[in-house]
Image (cartoon, rainbow, N blue to C red; front, side):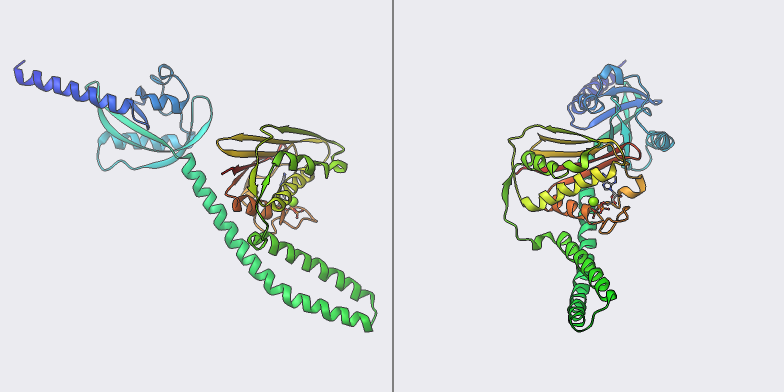
Length: 352
Ligand SMILES: Nc1ncnc2c1ncn2[C@@H]1O[C@H](COP(=O)(O)OP(=O)(O)OP(=O)(O)O)[C@@H](O)[C@H]1O
Ligand SMILES: [Mg+2]
């Protein structure tokens, strides 16, 4: 061995040492693997995957991926190993060691590890970004459907109001049972339109902002349903009851009334409704959980759209009001549901 190779070896070692330190302290999850076997994971990675390093090292890098994605990942790794072309970033959902699922973006590229070629895969948690994107989408969907609905409602309300006026005049000079039916039906139509205008344009309601204590309000709201809760067990799990938030109280009362009403209506015979309240990460969390009929997966993204209803006497405006109120206060709402088991509406409201 001549002097030159010794020097080169030492500088390679030093480089590798430095490189290891950089990735060890990186905030991103970095995994190095060869032939699908994990050889190394950094500290952030062990934290992210929710398992000790010893458990992760030696396991198969394909394990966290869903069956449907595995073949594609194998291809990526092969592509990464060849080192041709830039590493393409992909987004997908993976499972961590404790079984929780998380949305990530990742890319693979080749590295030298222990003197041999290996693959380095970088995972980045994108849950928050995705949540923000969904929030924006929800808001846009609501804003556009709301605007269209409010525009149409406004246009129809005026002619209907004059028809109602003329009908009144007609009734004064002429009596016929059909006229009463027409009057009653018109009244219903106008009521729906006024409701729609109210829920799709909550900004019109110049309600002052007041300090709201949700624990107090939820307790009194529940009393309104007492008679209908004969076969229903109600559990109130209200923690951090001193917390308050500035907001439009009447809009919130209406929103939680709508959520509880839906929960009650979802229970066909016997069942349970749980109302939870707690404070976490500067947000007030309120959950309305029922053990009712549940919502089919393909209907979940229809929730909040004006007039979407599966009930013969439903207006389908209840959730529109809920979504608009929560969004107007900078909050988000998530729904989880399983047909035959029940539904959870989770409202998160920022206190600041
Ligand atoms: N907790 C729930 N369990 C099961 N389905 C629900 C639940 N909440 C809402 N839904 C579904 O969403 C639809 C829309 O709800 P929304 O409150 O907007 O209108 P509605 O309840 O049908 O009518 P309204 O609120 O005017 O009485 C319901 O018809 C129902 O199919
Ligand atoms: Mg409803």
